[in-house]
Amino acid sequence: MKIGEASRRVGVDDHVLRHWHDLGVVVPDRTASGHRLYTEEHIRRIRIVQACQSVGMSLAEIRLVLHRDEEGRTELIEQKLRWIRSQRAQLADAESFLEHVIGCRHDLLSRCPDCTRYASTYPPHRRGK
Image (cartoon, rainbow, N blue to C red):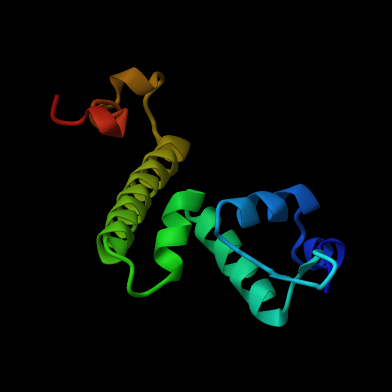
């Protein structure tokens, strides 16, 4: 299929697929006349790229992750997993805080020991400083 059909199938603009091609992330075949030709394998790869982007990976990182034998691949994936786990923990803390705030009996949140304890750890990237 040509680039227009491929872009419609995966929900991105043509220029995005051209950019990914230029960066070597998804390199389609070429017809005799030079048009990009996307196969089902390319569509699957594009969907993997989209999934990787949804977890915060850059195109350079995705290019590294796509091939199993790339040097640094495992370390990059482990780093992303640590980041995701950290985000999950921060969201769980935020959820607990907001659930507490709903039923908090203090007239001001700053008078509540539980609220101020949570606030003292915010923002999370400054913990321990």
